[in-house]
Image: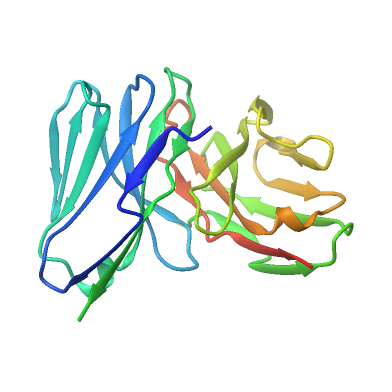
Amino acid sequence: SQQGEEDPQALSIQEGENATMNCSYKTSINNLQWYRQNSGRGLVHLILIRSNEREKHSGRLRVTLDTSKKSSSLLITASRAADTASYFCATDVGGAQKLVFGQGTRLTINP
Amino acid sequence: EAGVAQSPRYKIIEKRQSVAFWCNPISGHATLYWYQQILGQGPKLLIQFQNNGVVDDSQLPKDRFSAERLKGVDSTLKIQPAKLEDSAVYLCASSPRDSYNEQFFGPGTRLTVL
């Protein structure tokens, strides 16, 4: 069953703009992660936020987590063409040592 | 450090045929995962190994899918017989022991079943 749901499913913006993607989940988690997948490639781990954290930064990435709303957001600032990819949130489920991925947001950065 | 290796990268087969995928994880990584990613969806875990033992195979269609990880290093995933709905990208990932959080993914094998 699907744990994470990303929103929007697709997003197209101009280079230099900020991109925001959201993820909602259903059950309690220990942490939430974001991964990036370039076309035809494997996934790359971007950032992990623990359930007791509210915000985390990594370079141009900012992740927030609201456990009361069971939601997270990923903000990419000053987007670049190379950011064009699909972005997935992943959560552990009830403490199980495995990840469940959402459907992903397909981000397109237009030059 | 070499990444997760997978082969082949692409495979096209007829339905009811058999196919096998190979994965070589990052050296020293105890945990190995096989995921199925259908077009437009996120990866779905098929099976998880810790060394050469199965930790979770609850979503593996065991009537047609099998996987093994002999000697706790390389792994193979087999489908026999294949169905049209098995068309997907099969991703292998690995992580260090007790660190399922950060998984390192291979490039995947794109399977097309005709």
